[in-house]
Length: 184
Image (cartoon, rainbow, N blue to C red):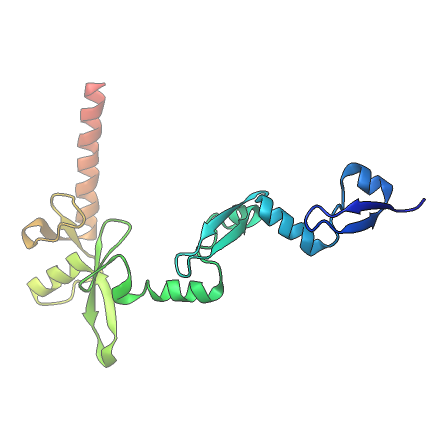
């Protein structure tokens, strides 16, 4: 059985393929490169994005989107390194005058160390240490009286040991649950 002449879907070149392949529409490309360019042009199972650095349009494969859950944000490694350099230290979007807003609601602050380095510490612990004039012990906890994690005014902070702090929150939670049960 002889091969049949088929036209490449991407570039229009004439290609010889087996009749069974041509019949099913399989391998109707002159090369693997032609097939991939055609797939990118059709956006089969992927998305096109605009690079935030160079504004170039690039393609993300569906498999990469599923595999990582968080597909790449730039078109190349060079653009990625530039993007990451924007997000360090003072250039980071969560940085506010030596403080960082954390995702859990607390604020991180810096304490200068030797040789120009800085140590990050929770701001409410730093404030309490400055007020009492010593470092906090490992079993000491700084409690926010109004339960707002980023309200670090000294009148809103209270120092207690870890055991006392857990007991206090357990009592508050029990009282809340009783109120909810009564209303129901």
